[in-house]
Image 1 (cartoon, rainbow, N blue to C red):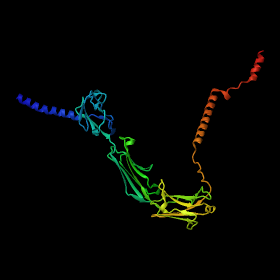
Image 2: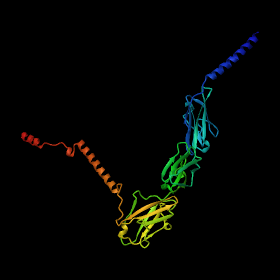
Image 3: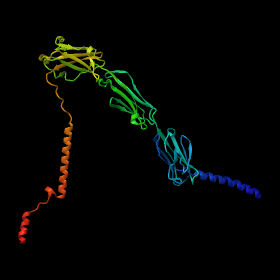
Image 4: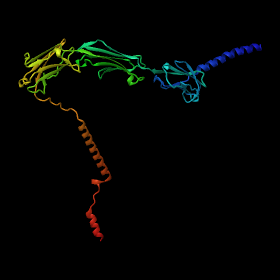
Length: 391
């Protein structure tokens, strides 16, 4: 009878104890872990990286897991490539310091800690981004050649960089567009302008993991086709520095692409007298360094009558023509008015400012100390009177 009662009692107590233990475990909550750095961190290869998990209470163990594997960290852990990081288990610190970051560390990194008074583990994680420069850049221009005012569609893309590099499109020395943060591509559309002919379109990518000298870059010349362009908006082009009785040459620098296929010179709206003049035709045209073409008209012996005449050139290519009216003069070429201060003027201004500044400082000093012209005046009349009374 007693045996039966004992068996029944044990049968009742064991489930109760199990229930109490289970309830105790379920009543606990996972410890809160503070992670540093909280957000993703970008690090260059070869730099150090510190990852720390902080618990509010002492911890018994510390495990770090990354793309390579799982590491059991102790307070005295010190290896060639990593070591323990933190102020100790007693203060709840579980951390690791990588002494030289390598590319295979890129990815998620986490910690697992066990507290003295908690059966549940604490977990924290962050993301390590190992920076690598782009392999190359890719420049895309939708056509090989453009006619003036056509739309040019350009694109510049960086390949293989992490995180995304800064991608920039240039036209010559001018910046056209720069990529937005986090994007490895930039697009730009513009209208073809004759002034852009033969300029370089440059696609360039700069990255935190590479120096300025190692920036990836590619370029391509922009080809714009256009009719001969006006030289000025005045209608008449004045040429100076001619001398009576000697040879004179009129030179017009014409921008056109393709080059002018025909040059037609006239003198006062009539064909030039070949005994007096020698108009160089399109076969003799020469390309200048700036891309313009030099059209020349030779006057064998300049006369006073030539000063009163109008020399006209009509330049033509496949896209159109332009007419230029020229007047010559015995006057010397006028000097351009200086639009900016020379070095001498700048030095004079600086000296004048310094003189004024020194004068102000000396005036304030004299007034404060009562010196020089600010010294208190002495009444010599009263002094002499006092001397006479004392006798």
